[in-house]
Each structure stands twice: as structure tokens, then as C-alpha cells.
Length: 316
Image 1 (cartoon, helix red, strand yellow):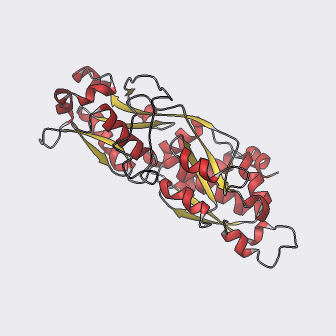
Image 2: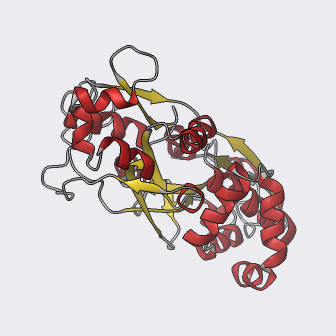
Image 3: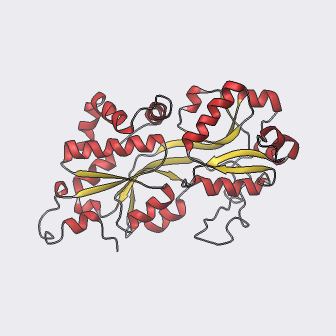
């Protein structure tokens, strides 16, 4: 049974109505720009409009759902599916510790390259990366293997991309790089400026589709009956059993929170169920952070000031 920060704060007040302004709500902050801004936005609105103290805690998305279950964190600002579907299925439901807010944002996950790369190398399909001759175009250190960024260390998509690389066979021809997104995107900027071939995991909404001429590589259509991606927690042999040489399933993301907020802080839960940040806004947020190098808290405050009517609707 989850015992949250909120529940602890309300010990002894069980007979009284839940009053959320007496609590501290902990918001997880994953390591990508739109989620960072959303986390600050939620926290600022709760403090200003609901009288709730918000504490932001940076944490990897693969750890965040478990932290909610353990009562360490109350809110996930941007939970992606199907990436975390196993964990969500285990923790949500009538008696679960995790609740998904109703608004979903349509997203996408792919392997991408640049227009210059396509014209120089002829790369148009993900499967071509398993060809050693093609892979050499992406070899920057002379070891005979290309390099491809597959995501941040702590992203839920990264082990799936590793499984996809093994399924396609390009784990043998390409070095699978994991690093923070801002470092990888700096490499994309350099590649675009110099015409150097580059290939990388990509997701949308994201500013790079606005800033650069990015091309999504072709893949066989997604087939649910043939898609098998386990997690290391589910099976130690997860990688050897993976079958994922195809496009990702349709992707979405949404806000998630600890189920017990509905009892311990009902106005917070009601607010979270109304929060809507569309794909266009999320892309603008990522642009402000990674291109304009602005602080997420400042971007959130500016958006709140410009959207007073929407905020009023959320906190009614």
C-alpha cells in the first residue's frame, strides 16, 4: 500500500476533509525539455493557485513510476506509452497506486537522419544500418563501426531502441551510444553545419523538426503480434528474446500521478486531470530550453502569464 508524503502529512486528520494546502507535493522531473517545463509549470500553478507547496525532484523516467508506487514522488509530468506500459499496467487500475490523467498527446518515436545524409549515403530505411558498408558512413573514430545515438541513459525508450537494434542486426555494425540529449543534439547541430552523416533516435514533439531538415527512416509497419519487447526486470534474457524489427506502436504521453492524491489532496488531483499541454506547446518548450538556452522555470512562468484564462479553467 502506498504511503505518500501527503498521507504522512495528514496523519491524525483522517476525520477532517483533506486539505491539500497543508501538504508538500513532490513532482518528478525527467531529463527532457518539455517534461522539465511542464514540471515547473505544474508546481508554480499549484503553489500560486492551490496553496500547495511543490518540490521538484530530478529523476530518470525509468525510476519515476516506481518512486510513485513507493510514495517518494507524487506526479510524473510526461509519461510515455507504450514505453512504460508494463509498469503502468501493473500499478494502475481500481486498486492501483498510479492514475493517468485523461488527456493524451499524440507523439512519435523513430530513427532519424538528416536530409544531407540521405542525399550523400542513400540511407532511407532503418534496416540498411545492418549493412557494414552503410555503417561505415557513420564511423567517426575509425574502428570500423558506425555510431548511432539511441537515447539518454535513463529514458524508457533507450532499452527498447537497444532491442530494436538487435532485432534489425545493426547492433553488430553500429556502436549504440547513450548520452544526455543536449550533448547528442549538439552533435546534430555540428553534423548539420558540416554535412557530416548522422543517424539518431528521434521523438516528436521536439524542436529539431522545426530547426533542422530531419528525415524519419522508413520501417516495416508495426505488427502487434510480432512485437515482443521485455524489460530487464521482467526477464534477465530480455535482450536476446526481443523481436522488434519494425516501427514503434502508436505513441502517446500524458500526465500521471499517485492515486491517493484523490483522497489526500482532491483539488490537486482535479487540477491534474484538467491540465492540457498540446504538442505544439511542448515543441515550443523544447525549443526554448535547448535552442534559446532558457531556464525551465522561466519558460513555465512566461507561459502561465500568457495563459491566465486556461489556468483559471484548470484550477476551478
